[in-house]
Length: 213
Image (cartoon, rainbow, N blue to C red):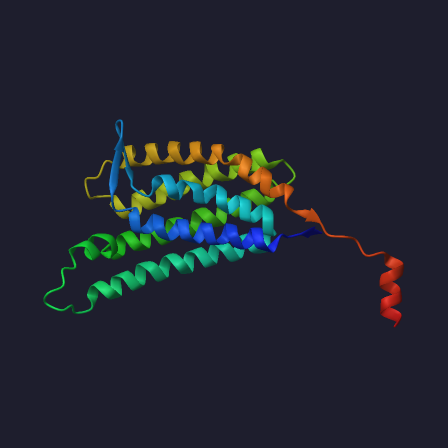
């Protein structure tokens, strides 16, 4: 049995949820690096894949599952409340153009984002858990190679297919960048593993004595 550092776990979860929400807000601003086009969120969002692995390492399978559903709820809340606020009437002197740009995502884009998140994170956690005897590097590379690819393909396809957007360009660049950042963050997961210690074992004689009392 392992002993979890609760402070470390809370810090990692807080950073993860923050990164997810900030990524959603900044995703609408496209940036270009060389010939590749990325959503503005790509550099921060790419961190979330390895952050999930670090939380999985610190808290185990149960924490990983709770994080997935917590992240899904946070993303859904942000998207849903943004749509609600934009739909409410405004005073005549107030300009809502900036809010429409940030929170005015169409229902199609919102649903594509949530579907990509849920599918890719569940598969990421399953692969990471199955490979826990193979070492951190193998866990991170294998789980993130699959999850980053799935996340990108599902989101880009559901959100932009049929719109004339350069789908292949959007997909390839994102997958490469997400994996590069995942590889750079492997030391983070290694360090987190050093902070997870074995819980002290209770001697059977002591335990049996406690039961008889």
